[in-house]
Image 1 (cartoon, rainbow, N blue to C red):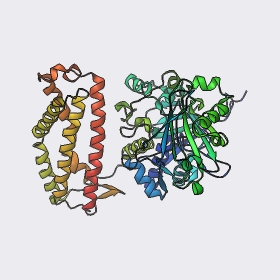
Image 2 (image 1 turned 90 degrees about the vertical axis):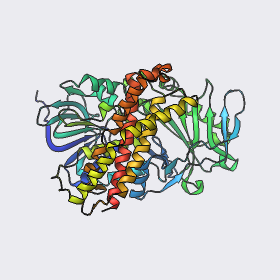
Image 3 (image 1 turned 90 degrees about the horizontal axis):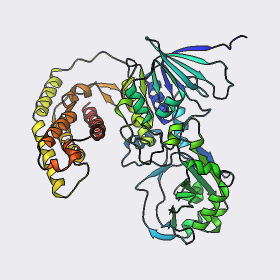
Image 4 (image 1 turned 135 degrees about the horizontal axis):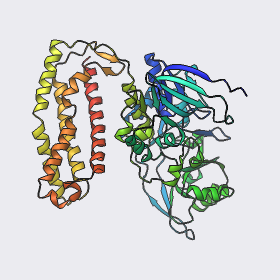
Length: 531
């Protein structure tokens, strides 16, 4: 019997995963003129960003819903750059809390969404706008990665169509560099790597839960936002053993429900196994609970359900077996390159800022953009700029002792204030923040000539050499702090600080990296202002 024909394609860069990280990265690569292909196992773009439309045309978010402009600068900047309209999450009115299924809900007034915003037209509009930034011939839907082989000069990827029968033709891609913007646990479960991945990398992938993997959402669209008319915010918390929806929120499509459409949304309180057991009756259970909270009008709406635990390209078996309520993201092994620099990992789970959120996907994309930037001949540094760098380096050389003194001062203040948790962690970051703030003031005061130094949009040629003296400062400060702790009688009463576990030190290092990234971005902004 003849074997099906195999398609073979060469590309400079292969991006696997067309969620927000993959799409944002593709947009940058296209703007630079770099050669790439973007692959997605689903028949649609967006990954866990998933939208639906009610019969009346209202946009509903079945995946990520919010972003926080105050704390998530990458999302805020992208929304503004793309010209998308954001609006504040409705948060005024009474919040309901139900602890006993046999009693009425309690009502109290409290804003709970902390400055979150949503997009008019839903988060799917973000995906649609981003996807228009890359040519259609660079996108490959229904391509599921099944194998990755390091053959030396390039990486070989094998893809199959998830809808094809076993034995159907595969597509083979040869790429000089590969980005896997797919949840790490899914990669471990679905992709055969040759040679086998480094054990440290495997352990990091196994220990990184997939955000939203075991979650389910329900959204109910209505003709009017009757709960607002009743003085309710739409927010509710249900905390009893028979809860179907644990958290409920106002999901209207805009600040004015009469224009954007009215809806309530909620997160399932039931486990994936319970949801499977009650699958047939789930619509009735959701309607009954909404009616119990908000009255009979809440029962009669247009219901949309999305169970991410049933998504083959979202939820891994390990996610179902080991769901994490408070996952940690940005493991160092997932932020470095492998296979001689040819293999990189992306996605929100690899982010060291905003992990699990849309912000984390953009944070990971930014890291990858820098890693994949075309190499270019270094620009000569003028005598003036070299002198400025020398002055800055001399200043940095004198900051080690003041930074350690600031650490000791903060540590003593926390001890005097009866703080007992993460003393080293908070004190190191506080000291580093002081030093970085002072360093930025130094940079701003030096007469750099940054004219003609923009290497790429938004990035200065001077940033790397100018900030080099500060590179590794956070690590050196942490080392000095740990040495101080080992000789401190006061800290000896706190074993977790006196002889910290590797996981604790690793958590501090992740935050040091995030602080360094923010410092670099701020320093780059100062140098761009001098252009």
